[in-house]
Image 1 (cartoon, rainbow, N blue to C red):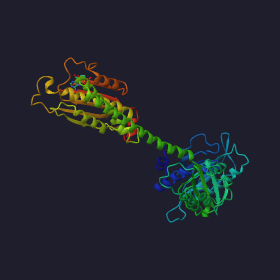
Image 2: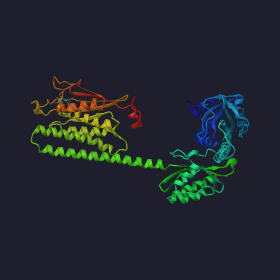
Image 3: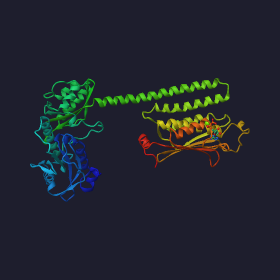
Image 4: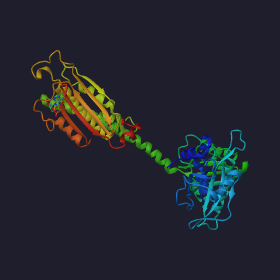
Length: 520
Ligand SMILES: Nc1ncnc2c1ncn2[C@@H]1O[C@H](COP(=O)(O)OP(=O)(O)O)[C@@H](O)[C@H]1O
Ligand SMILES: [Mg+2]
């Protein structure tokens, strides 16, 4: 679907500033639609041919729509848009007496010119027309609420025609603004409440105000109710600013454990300040959930921290045990377990420091790799290198992957470059320097990792599919199980051993977590 900007740029001579204003209108007009119980269509004159193009549409949340079909993109000429033409040319609101029929839905048409005021505050130009079309099929004798809404709607419609609505936006207002249905209060020019919708009345009741709002001075009431005097002053001042014709930022009022979001709007049809509109929304639950989420995040981090501590304790106990056993094989086995446990602890340590269930993996790999070089026979010094980046990985992949890499790196160091006495002779002097390279790249949604050494290669008759002891069993179990990937062990083209690992990254995971697109 085309956007407002696309449509306007393609079909009209509107300038960027005009289009920005139309975006402001469309950003704030749900309010007018709801108060009017009417559909709003934003029409712009098509360059030079007397037709109008619909660039935006909003349906009321308070009443049935007059249009079941989407109108955006329609270009209309002739009698159907005569009223738009009048409003556009004369710069005044045009109301139609008789209903028009859409199929069997009767509707009333109105046309509101959209004016963009120029910098010097004077009149400005009419750049578009808002069609306000009310489905009359359910119209009945209006209630007090409906009458109040309709009066306010007419004031706002006039302000669109004057160019004083919508008000300028305040940057950084993230919470969505309160809507008409959330709670609406209308004030007269003295700041006294003339009408409060039932939902508004309930919202104030939650803050501890039990009486009727009508007749109250709302600015004073906000000051009185707010638990925090500064916040109360802000919320009170916002009301006063709107009464002066300004558009203050949204304010929150906290009292008795409840939170209310308020938005005050000036009402000044034809430039005369006649009062203000205050929309309120009880956001107690939203704020409660915000707080709960923050505590949940902190709790998760704390748990990772404790898991890390516990794993480190387990590793320390195994290390103590290893020092005390006499049998060399048992000692080696215990020392391997120490390294396995410690590698998992690294992931939890990293998780305990991030707010995501995801970790920057390169740092973890580098630490595991440098730990692996320490197990090299004392006379061999193995160079460790990483090329490429793992990026940010989700916790569940990271934990398994670190264990796999730990085993592969240990094998490369241990078996690729065995101590001289194992096969009876030391390495010839002209051999290249022992090195292990971990290289990684992302290809589509997969992580391709190779761990290659330039050591003596796999033993003859080694069954690369099934052979090995506990280390490779762990590797295969994790790769095919948890990681749903593949692993291949082979002799490298230029000697040594190479382990090739492919791990699928869950669809979308990478992008969501890193916020960056992976390489194509
Ligand atoms: N990078 C390597 N270079 C040479 N041989 C290797 C390499 N990786 C594994 N191997 C061989 O595979 C065997 C099984 O490894 P593994 O299952 O990790 O058990 P362990 O390391 O306890 O021997 C090793 O004993 C070794 O013979
Ligand atoms: Mg091993």
